[in-house]
Length: 300
Image (cartoon, rainbow, N blue to C red):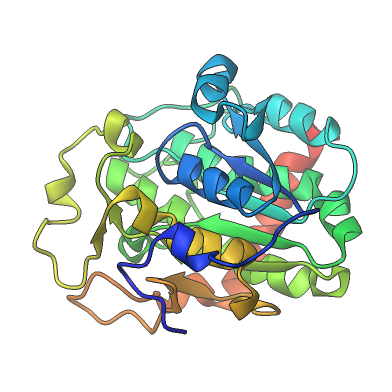
């Protein structure tokens, strides 16, 4: 592939016709989610964005996308969105996320970043599985982060009930969970024609992701850190769009991408690549089981 860190989402889909394909993009009202939705729609896809604030979503999407109410921190909202979907779904981009929030908890007592970034998206994909399978060649895209290298999943204390809460550790854990989800879904849903991949979009200027920051980002990801790709929004959406719709990655599944390429192993001191624990099949299977037990009683 000739694409790289400076490639834009529109360049990835130049000449690609998505007419007849249906897509859901979470967090599609701003930032790289909005750009992902816009570019998919420009290529002919029928796009729905899932957002907490429907009116803000409508203002952002204009006429190129439909808007559905979706609060990923609220399992009932996720269940309603999934139950309201009719017909096949070809593309699911799990894009929405929160980062380094103060310690917050859902109604279930779950730590908010893990609940929103992972469990909400897990329940959404789980609820939309039949629609994805009906498409015959669906793709699920999990937007993770280079931040996953700062936090493995602590299966003994997922929700910081015993260890002191750390906003960046919680964020890193949730982003590792995004990658593990893709690894597990790739294996379990291959027979349904569903592929699943995760990605690091890079450090994106001009998004709302940092609005909840509890501590300055420099303490987690220094501006001069080796290997960090700093991008604008069209560049930041490129890898999402590649995995969602490019024929270049047809059939590719269970992988982690950055800069429109399959990422190599993470090397200490360099803020890129994928941590070994994030693509470990045994850890992926364990997280799948834990997540299924968490969301099934709520989703019914």
